[in-house]
Length: 222
Image (cartoon, rainbow, N blue to C red):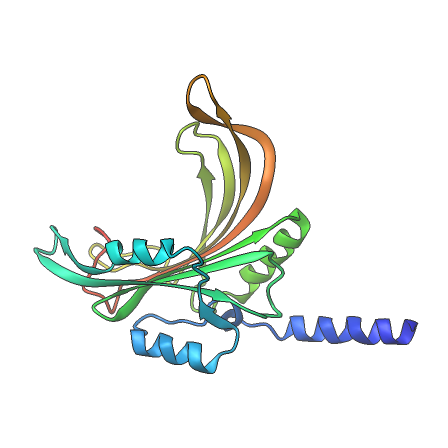
């Protein structure tokens, strides 16, 4: 029995060590709707996001379509695609959500959100992701996340870029890896508003990818 246990532990460790950046973010700038549909068809770990009540579809109908950007003096066709990982052995999260955004059928932005009940598991995955960021993103800058209302710190992370600084007018190309704490909120029936408590509800790890080089959009709005 002990030998079986150690064999399974070794097998799990080996599978985990084979995880790559593509295990967590299997997209690249310029991917089309067709490319993403093909990825869903060929990669068994990628699927459409569960939408039991149709709420996400309703939001997509509002967000997707031609959007006018004043700074461009032109319209851009925006398509937001919501996905999820299924049976991905590299993930240790309890739930996940993938959202990629295409402008004129070219992916320029993507976010992967991973949720955890345990801090140590989340932090281990965070440290792993920091090591997996593609080598060309060799410049780093730390950042903090704050509550927009109270200005309290709720998280932190690292921006990765390919250059130490962007030249004027140069389009954004960066990856962000960060984590934050979600605190429980309680309803105040007298004031008719929610108040955030000091009790942690969950830990959230997020990958943010932006590459505008193939998009009509610029740093002024994307």
